[in-house]
Image (cartoon, rainbow, N blue to C red):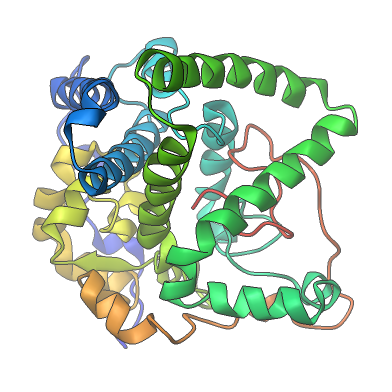
Length: 340
């Protein structure tokens, strides 16, 4: 393990060239993703079902990567325009406004991985762990393996998130309810297009697009963060993955994203190559050689103990149902890594 070095070893932010008013690379990407979605759903009957599933899952995961890019201020300097690009709910289950708010909360790096403070944490407090019972703990343990995260992980993530959101709405959170009403209108429009206009069965869209897309997203988030004493060492790097790098918009080079979250996706590879040694020094050497390396290590073995090291004492902090302030997935002790 490389000894940690402070991030002042990185070139200062001002050395990154200014962002143009309109990032045409990201505009083109959005056109490809939305155009691909409409083309695939329209022509799906002309393709083998496995091709529909593979392409559909890719497009939904790619759309999630585009939403992540939009959240960080791309492709324009106008938030209203950016939000319009990211808002369409192709995944059905995750409102963009909730994703946006929680992901920005996740970027408080000093709280990374904390199950109370980080909406995208995959860890539990000891109190939540003990309340889960034997079956729940068994499921959580399986979900810490890569195979578990890719197979059962999406349903655990989606069901936990929806249950938590339902509790907030039923407890009278009007702001949350308004978000869900707007989201439901978008979901209805997507389903009318997919089912009524294109004639695609709901099961095919639900599995081939939504579930497979969620599984691909879970692959990206699986090894992104791991607890360490210094918060800079909690963020990983997955190198040498050109195909998944494009799918994830190079968010696999994750420590660079956390240190320079405003850098657009198409500049990340060059900046990573330029500053690789400094970035690896910053994150303490938490580097994987592609996703095959991640699978080799963790396909059947847990990535970490699901109980957070700072919350393993009996009776530690109780579940916090506060909706994160402008957060993407609300507070997440019960539903860790709800969007990842």
